[in-house]
Length: 194
Length: 222
Image 1 (cartoon, helix red, strand yellow):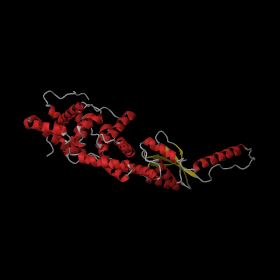
Image 2 (cartoon, rainbow over the protein chains, first blue to last red):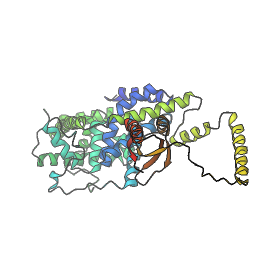
Image 3 (cartoon, rainbow over the protein chains, first blue to last red):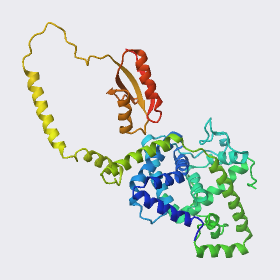
Image 4 (cartoon, each protein chain N blue to C red):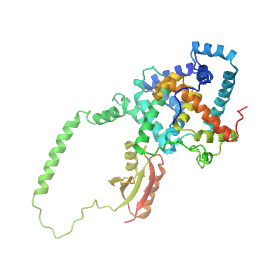
C-alpha cells in the first residue's frame, strides 16, 4: 500500500457523498482541491484570472458529475483530468498560451508567472530561486514535476492523465529533473534544503 | 519541447523508477527490485539523494505559491447551494451542466396550472391586438407613454461567475430592469426609477456593494 492510499480512499468516499448531493462533502472536497487545482491550471495557462475561472468550472463539473466517477483512477487523477481538459480547451479558445520553449541563455531574468505584485514575497530565498528556475522550464516539464513530487501520482496515473506512454512519463520526469537541476546550478543555488 | 524518448545509455533503468520510489507510489515488486539495486549502486543512491532533496525543495516552493481569491469559493458554493435547493424542491440532481440547464428549463413547465396560464395569456394577447387595431378617437392632448415615473440609467458590468438568479434578486432590490446590453465590453444598461441624481447614485452604491455579483456600476449621464 502506498503512502497516499488511505487518503485516496477517504476522497473516494467524499466523492460518493457528493454524488448523493451532500453539500458538506463537496465543501470538504473543494477545500482539499481548490489551491492544488488552481496552481496546476496556472502551470498550464500562465494566467491567474483564467486559472480561477477554470477552477470554478472544474469544481462545478465535479459537483454535477460526481456520479460518473467510476473508481478506475484516483480521485485526484480524475479531478486533474477535468481541469486539464478545461485548461487546454481555454488555451485553444483564447490563444493566450504561448509555447514556453525559451532559450536558456539570458532567460534567468524572465519574470516568474506565479508572482503577483501583492503576493510576490516568497518565504525565503531558496523557495524564490526554485520558483524562478521552475518558471524557466517548459510547460510539460513543470506539469510533470508537479504531478510526481507534489500530487504524488503513480506513473500509470500520469500516463493516463497526460495520455502519453508510461515510458515517456519516465523519461520526461528524468529530463525535467535534469533541466531543473541545470537551472538551479546556473543560479548558484545548488545546495539542497536542509 | 525536444528531448529523447529514452534515457541516456549510461543511466540505469532503475533510475527511471526513482521518482516514484521517492513519492511512495511504486508497486511492491518494483520497489523490492529498486531496493536491491540501490544496495549495490552508488550512482543510483546519489540520484535518490538528489531526488529526495528536490522533492522537499519543490514541496516548499509549491506550498508558497499563491491561492485563488476567496471570491471564487463563495461563487462556487453559491451555485452549488442553488443547485442543491433546486434538487430538494423536487427536480432530480443533474448529471452535467447541459442536463442541469435542461432540467431547470423543464421545471418551469411542471406546475399543472401552466398550460391554463398560457391559454389565458394567448387570449389576452389576441384581445390586445384587436383593441390596438380599433380606430381610436382623436385626442387633442398629448399623452405620455412612459410609466409616469422618472427613470435613470446605470451602466453595469456583472462578475463572470454571477448566476442569473443572483442578478435577478439584485435587480429586484433596486427595482431595476435591464434595458440594453451586453455591449462588446460586457456592459448592461439598467433602468431604475429615480427622483434625482442622489437616488441613482445610492442605487449604484447598492449594486457596487455586491462585489460577488457586480464588477462595476456607474450612473449614465443623460
